[in-house]
Length: 459
Ligand SMILES: Cc1ncc(COP(=O)(O)O)c(C=O)c1O
Image 1 (cartoon, protein in one colour):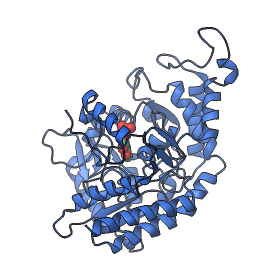
Image 2 (image 1 turned 180 degrees about the horizontal axis):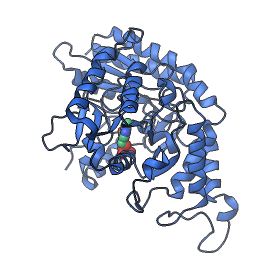
Image 3 (image 1 turned 90 degrees about the vertical axis):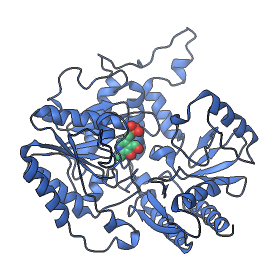
Image 4 (image 1 turned 120 degrees about the vertical axis):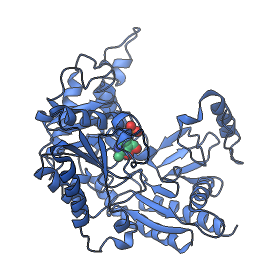
């Protein structure tokens, strides 16, 4: 059984954590020193069962880009599903609305969501190869389906290239392309390539010139060794789960050039970055690239579980009936949520707000570097995602400082705190509030974080 994490100001929350420890295995969650129990949410806030208010600096896990329970979004979501008031006022045991199934059938709402998504992608610079939507039930499934399609186009070309220390999920080929080559059981079809982490280890290095040549030579060497077996390359625009490393655009452009020259499918995993995280709707716009396939998830439906691989019709045609199907993909629930989310992004004000508040949060995070245990700050210029890397200091490791910081932020001043996830790569705290955060909310949350860091210094 789990040893529950308890908090002095949360008697009700502690009771629930105690039950949780008995009812669910610990593997259900990734470790976080706070183990937040969240009773209600609205906008950038969560409330615990004890009534404590938390600034959500995680957006779920980069999911609620529009904030939690946005009213306009919810009304649209209901309308798309046919769940609006009139339908529910029917007195009978059932009411007529969109069916919550898409297996071996299609709903008009699914077709409309596919159309709108493709239109949205193709209208942006870099989106013109994106012709069809292959729905998936989670980000890792979208990865899996895109890689299946690439491998199926020519079975003699079996090698998948993946950027080292990336994160694409835990299951199947998503797990196989995550991390690095340390696991001897790893799928032998996956070869890892270097990602320029050192060159982008801190925001202060953003303006430095970047030389992609060594990375290109590494690819050439693989090509020399494996020839036409190289089939597909998967990368993230920035390493998210691997510790928030945001590369120079020339790196991704070089990967794309190499793929084009050798007929390698270039897959950009935007499960984390899509729907505004980089300050643009999609990260491929920020990085000046034109992927063959983009993978969408998380913010795609603002919290309703769903994902998709979007790519060329010719590529997806290599999978036959059923090879890319499953029970939940393309379900009307997620399609309604995608349509509602697209509606809410349409007038550009969410992205505008993101770009306006971004420099303020970045400046506040850079200020944290005055504490000797805060080593680096990395992030996306104009975006709403950063990693704050902790270092060893005094007798404590980087990982201990990072975990202590998350806990101190969570507890905040008692009545109000800042909700963060457990550190990435053991020592990087991710900062990713909803894109709709206001200047005032950002300032207040930064003050809580700064005081939390001060309290750690004074121990
Ligand atoms: C870039 C990226 N790809 C894929 C995934 C996996 O998504 P899911 O957890 O929905 O399977 C994640 C999850 O964090 C991610 O960040």
